[in-house]
Length: 612
Image 1: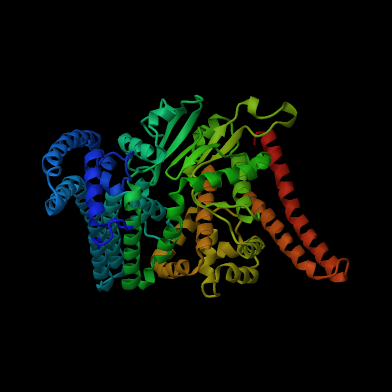
Image 2: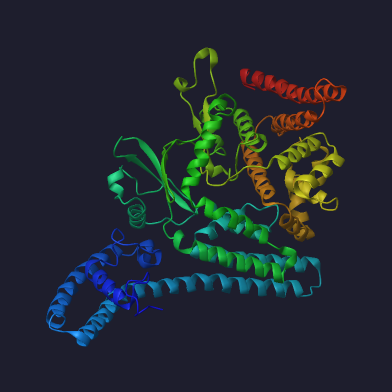
């Protein structure tokens, strides 16, 4: 409530408000973000490719004409008026000014409300139709299992098509969610995952006009003042951002500029809430298919990913840590030039996706070596204290860059002829110490086929019960239970993978959903990273098979366990029998693990030497 008693209060009173309206309506354009705070809903047209700049200029000209009119009116009415008549005149003029000033903002506000309603209604209608469709199919009685499976498959496809259309129309985080779903082949029916595959590469592009306005609003400078030769065609478009090639005006250096989609700031809070509503409804009506864990992961990560200054911090930290480990990992992180919450400027480095085997073979790059380096990179991130884990290492965030001989080092200490470039550092997590140590012991038990220890440590780091263990072992290793507990180092066959898919679709899905809803979020991210790196390794189709990657993992696990054991031995007096025997056992176990890896490395070296 405005106060008439105290015109100088914080609210300013009605008198002060009238004065501000007069001043603002006569001196500022509603579409000039450089002169006043611009709320995202007041500039809705600029985000969807309309001619808002022309509209803004027109409003500016109209404002000048109206300003001349108001001065004449004020001269004729206000100056002669005194006492009550002056007050009435000012209030009348304030009302007139406020209506003319806020007309455009009201128009924008109602337009925004209309778009919010439209986005919401798409989600609500599609969710209601899918709920009803599934309820009818699941409650219907069929004569045979084959008939039921056929009708359920049709229902899956109908619902996937409806959902895809909503994702395509709403874009933003819906596309990110769809990309996540398309990768959940171990959990969801193929009708869903196959329908969403196009989302991996087909993301809507923001217009250059909206990019320019966002850049001006965020930096206070025009795009052309900072960059030259900015290519309007993006190098790549993702769900949250797009990347353009440009050169810095000051230095001429080639850079990659990552722009967040401008419309995200307007709709992300709404979309997150809608996602929660839909997943909560699924949890209520179909509790055996709960997806709240997926919402929790999204809600925890999305606002961090939208702050590119956090991404810059992660990139710089990772670059510094791996700088001295280039010989082992071949990892290259593009230099960060500067960052704003919605804009990131970095070194321009290109390469080919790691699944582009033609490119790799043409440049005489060893796929075995690429696989080994990838194993060292992500095992270092998971098992090394103080190092953060990149949680989105899909093929689009990695590139293989061939190195000319001039960059490979001197002939007597020649390094690898490639680099692995890692992009998109928005989503990182640091794994807690206790969880990391139990996780390391779990994998050593898997490699040693020690089922009792596997069960013990799965319970320690993920809270898995004995009844849940077979399903969890399959999920975390990507193998059926028999292979997970007995022969993990063999290649996965197509028959084994199909057997796992059939098992999930044949009745294990509710149990798997319940399991995923129970485990900590950090374990879910580790599972996701495992799946992505496993898929990358299989795409490389190396001659070594999975044995080499498991031996590398065993080495990192053994180092983690050694650190844990030696820390526990500090409770005993130095040179006591318990301390000596414990230290000897710990180091001997570690030595055996690392020796296996070194022997395998010698084999790989000989194979490369003989071009086998």
